[in-house]
Image (cartoon, rainbow, N blue to C red):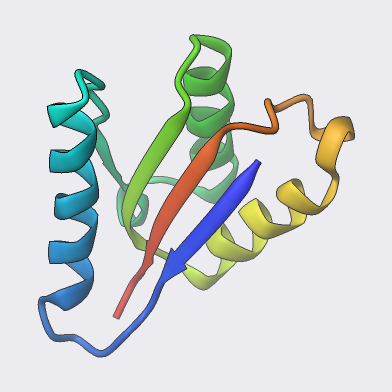
Length: 97
């Protein structure tokens, strides 16, 4: 699993970058919703990633992620094969301002 964390100030650049990634994937015929991390508990957030990966998703997009959510995803990625998630899963996380 690869993790890309998008950070920055409260300016709109982070959200725009995530939307650009979503648009690029859509142009490739890949429909990926944007999950709002602030609306999820950390365990539920991790379950969302796992559920989408099990369903065959290769990308996960999330906006407004908390520090705890980002740390949990990075810890999960560090487990590599033991995480049970595919190595070609790419997770894009926008840190909450």
